[in-house]
Length: 265
View 1: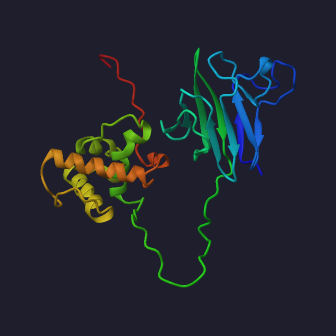
View 2 (view 1 turned 30 degrees about the horizontal axis):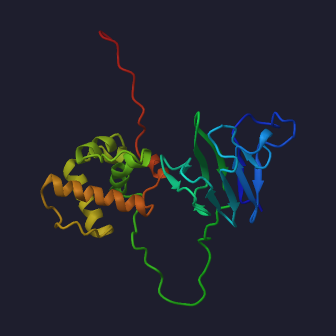
């Protein structure tokens, strides 16, 4: 069983050294592969990163059952692992860190180099998930979901619109205001009559009934500062626990804009 597939940098096909090494490196549980500049000709490492700023032995990949680990052999440079599906999500592996687990399914490993950066891709196609039909032995009360949200409800559309900027770009700290959410959702048939009061109601319902936030205020309290804190807490919790994910953006109207008409048209 393959745990990960590594795509080194460079053109596809056999390398220029004539060794016939395939472009993709397939690794199963327990396999290890070192990466770096290597000895002359790239010897000594499985993943060759030909930059004079990269150590000959820069690090190591280790394939586990359904994930992989990254070791950083550098004494002074951190490595970055980017989630290629995570809209800016990444993790940093500190210098000399060994066996850092990587949870991403599609990743790019980025190393600082003399000529900017050098990177290679790692794919982990064997992530395991619990079968929803799996039954837990023994009888008892059914588990109640702590954050039961109805993805067909209008309040969920409000929550997705609230989280949209951070889903698209994690560095974007600005959250949409109530008016922004109204304008974002109005193109939807179900939201043609949406008002600011209705959005505020949905935010209060999410905060106090569905997600049970402690924001230090009562439902319906006035004040832009307190309302902004409530929206920030909602977005933070929803994103932290995966209640709103990138695939939910498909529920929102298209962001395509119509071309402006010519003057006099």
